[in-house]
Image 1 (cartoon, helix red, strand yellow):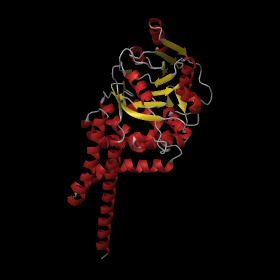
Image 2 (cartoon, helix red, strand yellow):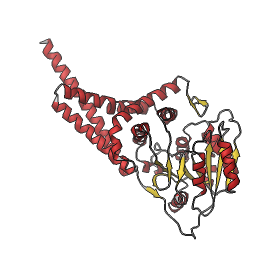
Image 3 (cartoon, helix red, strand yellow):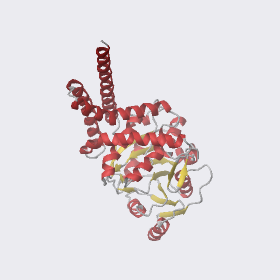
Image 4 (cartoon, one colour):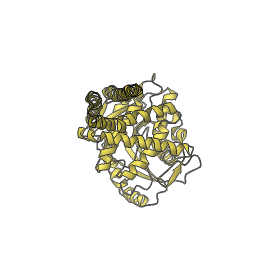
Length: 395
């Protein structure tokens, strides 16, 4: 009798576990579908006529130890088809050849200003400090903040700038297209991007003043009016933040006086964020804990949800098939198929190959590990090391 009760209990527990895994997969698919359908208003880089009238734009780029990519970034910016622009690059105390490359480029084009960054003050994170110094010498009525690991298509800046003005926006940030070349990039980066979008919700809600908890900018590309930037205190208002783009968006949402938006893009700019497994690990570790800082419940739900998607779902499916528990295996397989189909759809909208969805189980398991690791690093006070500087989250 005891054995019979134990068997019934085990069967009920197994059914309950599989039910939870199926529900998590379906929730992920449903949330992702809603997010995808409301997240891909797109700015398309397009050619403007010679008579286009846009206010002066200052493109500000922070650069610390960027010798690998700074020249291609700056040259692409100097090739912008914008009627009135300048490029300001701040050499943030680089220890490589970044400064000499910039000085050579500046000698060839007067539109490029190179700022020698001052030592990092106490209480500041490197990127906000560099951007503040760049803005101080910029002359534009509008500002474009972009990163040194970007490559810009010729009509990108004018297209985003014009879109912001046409829509009456004070800030327009766009998601740049991503270049994924190594196996590590292709296998892991899409899942990391999707986890961020899953946690944020539809990016259309960034521009909804009624959705005060949905705030996100992409630091790779932010176009902002000088008046709005100055009104909220600029990057000085987020001086101690590693995820300065996220916190800048939150500052605008709290302020409430300005119209902001986050959109997808096409033929505007491309980014290759990280080029190795090590770079991916350190890059996302520094951001993840800060994204959920002050939201421990959200972090816990995220970790549980990611873990259910992978590795628990794939492991459970293999075990169910191996033990010939076909009804449960079929239910779980259908749930996983729904989530994978959604991933393929989102990747296509992101202008990435849907075939990369085959790496989703590995990528999501990796994402969960990165999130747990980053939270432990900051909770312990050790923080992370980035660009030769250590940040604990309490700069």
